[in-house]
Image (tube, rainbow, N blue to C red; front, side):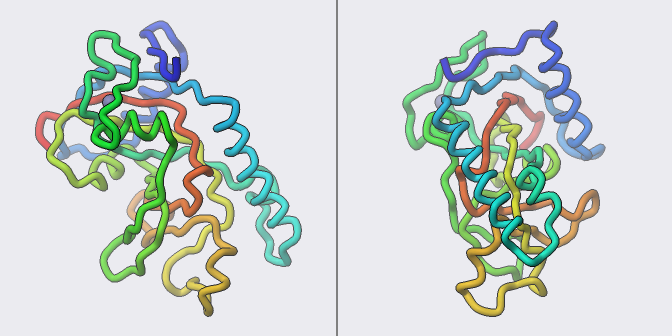
Length: 218
Ligand SMILES: [Zn+2]
Protein backbone atom coordinates (compact mmCIF):
# COMPACT_ATOMS: atom_id res chain seq x y z
CA UNK A 1 0.00 0.00 0.00
CA UNK A 2 1.69 3.25 -1.07
CA UNK A 3 -0.28 5.40 1.39
CA UNK A 4 -1.49 5.06 4.96
CA UNK A 5 -3.47 7.40 7.13
CA UNK A 6 -1.89 9.13 10.09
CA UNK A 7 -4.32 9.05 12.99
CA UNK A 8 -4.79 11.81 15.60
CA UNK A 9 -2.58 9.94 18.10
CA UNK A 10 0.29 9.74 15.64
CA UNK A 11 3.11 12.15 16.49
CA UNK A 12 3.95 12.39 12.79
CA UNK A 13 0.46 13.71 12.16
CA UNK A 14 0.97 16.58 14.60
CA UNK A 15 4.27 17.53 13.03
CA UNK A 16 2.80 17.67 9.53
CA UNK A 17 -0.23 19.52 10.87
CA UNK A 18 2.04 22.14 12.49
CA UNK A 19 4.25 22.70 9.44
CA UNK A 20 1.18 23.03 7.23
CA UNK A 21 -0.57 25.50 9.57
CA UNK A 22 2.49 27.52 10.52
CA UNK A 23 3.39 28.17 6.90
CA UNK A 24 -0.10 28.95 5.63
CA UNK A 25 0.80 32.60 6.44
CA UNK A 26 -2.33 34.07 5.00
CA UNK A 27 -4.32 35.67 7.73
CA UNK A 28 -6.75 37.13 5.22
CA UNK A 29 -6.54 34.13 2.91
CA UNK A 30 -9.19 31.49 2.51
CA UNK A 31 -10.07 29.36 5.51
CA UNK A 32 -9.01 25.79 5.13
CA UNK A 33 -9.87 22.53 6.78
CA UNK A 34 -7.55 19.52 6.83
CA UNK A 35 -9.47 16.42 5.86
CA UNK A 36 -6.77 13.78 6.14
CA UNK A 37 -3.02 13.44 6.48
CA UNK A 38 -1.53 10.48 4.65
CA UNK A 39 1.97 9.11 4.85
CA UNK A 40 3.65 8.07 1.62
CA UNK A 41 5.42 4.72 1.63
CA UNK A 42 7.93 5.17 -1.12
CA UNK A 43 9.38 2.10 -2.77
CA UNK A 44 12.98 1.15 -2.15
CA UNK A 45 13.69 2.03 -5.77
CA UNK A 46 12.29 5.57 -5.41
CA UNK A 47 14.27 6.12 -2.21
CA UNK A 48 17.41 4.82 -3.88
CA UNK A 49 16.99 7.23 -6.81
CA UNK A 50 16.54 10.08 -4.32
CA UNK A 51 19.72 9.05 -2.47
CA UNK A 52 21.54 8.79 -5.81
CA UNK A 53 20.63 12.45 -6.45
CA UNK A 54 22.09 13.36 -3.07
CA UNK A 55 25.29 11.43 -3.77
CA UNK A 56 25.66 13.11 -7.17
CA UNK A 57 25.25 16.58 -5.63
CA UNK A 58 27.69 15.78 -2.85
CA UNK A 59 30.40 14.49 -5.14
CA UNK A 60 29.89 17.49 -7.42
CA UNK A 61 30.28 19.84 -4.45
CA UNK A 62 33.43 18.08 -3.29
CA UNK A 63 34.95 18.29 -6.75
CA UNK A 64 33.96 21.93 -7.23
CA UNK A 65 36.15 24.89 -6.39
CA UNK A 66 33.11 26.86 -5.18
CA UNK A 67 32.33 26.71 -1.50
CA UNK A 68 29.10 24.82 -1.05
CA UNK A 69 29.11 23.41 2.47
CA UNK A 70 25.40 22.45 2.47
CA UNK A 71 25.63 20.60 -0.81
CA UNK A 72 28.77 18.84 0.34
CA UNK A 73 27.19 17.88 3.67
CA UNK A 74 23.78 16.50 2.69
CA UNK A 75 23.04 17.63 -0.85
CA UNK A 76 21.31 20.75 0.54
CA UNK A 77 18.21 18.88 1.60
CA UNK A 78 15.14 21.03 2.21
CA UNK A 79 11.55 20.46 3.24
CA UNK A 80 9.28 21.81 0.52
CA UNK A 81 5.62 21.99 -0.47
CA UNK A 82 3.92 21.20 -3.75
CA UNK A 83 0.18 21.65 -4.16
CA UNK A 84 -1.73 19.61 -6.70
CA UNK A 85 -5.21 18.49 -7.69
CA UNK A 86 -7.10 15.54 -6.29
CA UNK A 87 -10.04 14.43 -8.37
CA UNK A 88 -10.82 11.14 -6.65
CA UNK A 89 -11.99 10.18 -3.19
CA UNK A 90 -8.46 9.73 -1.83
CA UNK A 91 -8.56 10.67 1.83
CA UNK A 92 -12.31 10.73 2.21
CA UNK A 93 -13.92 8.16 4.45
CA UNK A 94 -10.52 6.70 5.24
CA UNK A 95 -9.66 5.88 1.65
CA UNK A 96 -5.93 5.44 1.08
CA UNK A 97 -6.08 3.80 -2.34
CA UNK A 98 -4.81 5.54 -5.42
CA UNK A 99 -7.22 5.95 -8.30
CA UNK A 100 -6.38 5.14 -11.89
CA UNK A 101 -7.67 8.41 -13.40
CA UNK A 102 -4.28 8.99 -14.94
CA UNK A 103 -3.34 11.67 -15.86
CA UNK A 104 -6.59 13.24 -14.62
CA UNK A 105 -5.90 12.93 -10.92
CA UNK A 106 -2.56 14.53 -10.37
CA UNK A 107 -1.88 13.52 -6.78
CA UNK A 108 -2.35 9.84 -7.60
CA UNK A 109 -0.19 10.20 -10.72
CA UNK A 110 2.63 11.74 -8.66
CA UNK A 111 2.46 9.08 -5.94
CA UNK A 112 2.44 6.32 -8.54
CA UNK A 113 4.96 7.65 -11.05
CA UNK A 114 6.82 10.45 -9.30
CA UNK A 115 7.09 14.10 -10.30
CA UNK A 116 7.38 15.28 -13.87
CA UNK A 117 9.43 18.27 -15.00
CA UNK A 118 7.36 20.94 -16.71
CA UNK A 119 8.24 24.16 -18.45
CA UNK A 120 7.57 26.91 -15.95
CA UNK A 121 8.38 30.48 -15.04
CA UNK A 122 9.07 31.68 -11.52
CA UNK A 123 7.50 35.13 -11.70
CA UNK A 124 6.92 37.42 -14.63
CA UNK A 125 9.90 38.38 -16.69
CA UNK A 126 11.96 35.40 -15.63
CA UNK A 127 13.24 32.81 -18.04
CA UNK A 128 11.55 29.53 -18.72
CA UNK A 129 12.91 26.59 -16.80
CA UNK A 130 12.14 22.91 -17.03
CA UNK A 131 11.59 21.57 -13.56
CA UNK A 132 9.16 21.12 -10.71
CA UNK A 133 8.03 24.14 -8.70
CA UNK A 134 8.29 23.74 -4.94
CA UNK A 135 7.63 26.35 -2.28
CA UNK A 136 8.83 27.08 1.24
CA UNK A 137 5.30 27.51 2.54
CA UNK A 138 1.95 25.77 2.23
CA UNK A 139 0.20 29.08 1.55
CA UNK A 140 2.40 29.87 -1.39
CA UNK A 141 2.06 26.36 -2.79
CA UNK A 142 -1.72 26.78 -2.61
CA UNK A 143 -1.53 30.07 -4.53
CA UNK A 144 0.91 28.67 -7.06
CA UNK A 145 -1.62 26.07 -8.17
CA UNK A 146 -3.90 28.21 -10.24
CA UNK A 147 -7.16 26.33 -10.19
CA UNK A 148 -10.63 26.64 -8.75
CA UNK A 149 -10.69 23.35 -6.89
CA UNK A 150 -11.65 23.75 -3.27
CA UNK A 151 -10.43 20.28 -2.37
CA UNK A 152 -6.72 19.87 -2.95
CA UNK A 153 -3.68 17.80 -2.05
CA UNK A 154 -0.61 19.36 -0.47
CA UNK A 155 2.49 17.26 -0.83
CA UNK A 156 5.13 17.69 1.85
CA UNK A 157 8.41 16.68 0.27
CA UNK A 158 12.08 16.18 0.99
CA UNK A 159 14.10 17.86 -1.73
CA UNK A 160 17.76 17.67 -2.69
CA UNK A 161 18.14 21.30 -3.73
CA UNK A 162 21.85 21.01 -4.42
CA UNK A 163 23.42 24.01 -6.07
CA UNK A 164 20.83 26.79 -6.31
CA UNK A 165 20.87 29.40 -9.04
CA UNK A 166 19.57 32.61 -7.52
CA UNK A 167 17.99 35.17 -9.80
CA UNK A 168 18.91 36.39 -13.24
CA UNK A 169 22.24 37.89 -12.19
CA UNK A 170 23.43 34.43 -11.34
CA UNK A 171 22.42 33.11 -14.74
CA UNK A 172 25.00 31.03 -16.51
CA UNK A 173 26.98 32.82 -19.20
CA UNK A 174 26.55 30.01 -21.65
CA UNK A 175 23.86 27.37 -21.87
CA UNK A 176 26.30 24.55 -21.19
CA UNK A 177 26.92 25.83 -17.71
CA UNK A 178 23.26 25.57 -16.74
CA UNK A 179 23.60 21.86 -16.06
CA UNK A 180 25.87 22.63 -13.14
CA UNK A 181 22.84 23.88 -11.19
CA UNK A 182 20.40 21.55 -9.49
CA UNK A 183 17.66 24.08 -8.79
CA UNK A 184 16.61 27.63 -9.60
CA UNK A 185 15.27 30.10 -7.03
CA UNK A 186 12.55 32.65 -7.77
CA UNK A 187 12.82 36.27 -6.72
CA UNK A 188 13.55 36.71 -3.02
CA UNK A 189 10.24 36.63 -1.20
CA UNK A 190 8.70 38.13 1.88
CA UNK A 191 9.34 35.19 4.19
CA UNK A 192 12.41 33.47 2.87
CA UNK A 193 14.72 33.87 -0.08
CA UNK A 194 13.69 30.47 -1.35
CA UNK A 195 9.92 31.02 -1.45
CA UNK A 196 9.96 29.47 -4.89
CA UNK A 197 12.41 26.88 -6.04
CA UNK A 198 12.28 24.97 -9.29
CA UNK A 199 13.94 21.61 -8.89
CA UNK A 200 15.43 20.52 -12.20
CA UNK A 201 15.59 16.79 -11.57
CA UNK A 202 12.15 15.43 -10.55
CA UNK A 203 13.82 12.42 -8.91
CA UNK A 204 15.40 14.78 -6.37
CA UNK A 205 11.93 15.26 -4.83
CA UNK A 206 10.63 12.65 -2.43
CA UNK A 207 6.98 13.09 -1.42
CA UNK A 208 6.61 12.12 2.23
CA UNK A 209 3.13 13.25 3.28
CA UNK A 210 -0.08 14.16 1.54
CA UNK A 211 -2.41 16.62 3.23
CA UNK A 212 -5.90 16.46 1.78
CA UNK A 213 -7.58 19.77 2.59
CA UNK A 214 -10.44 21.97 1.58
CA UNK A 215 -10.64 25.74 1.33
CA UNK A 216 -13.79 27.76 1.77
CA UNK A 217 -13.14 29.63 -1.47
CA UNK A 218 -10.59 28.97 -4.23
ZN1 LIG B 1 -6.77 9.98 -7.48
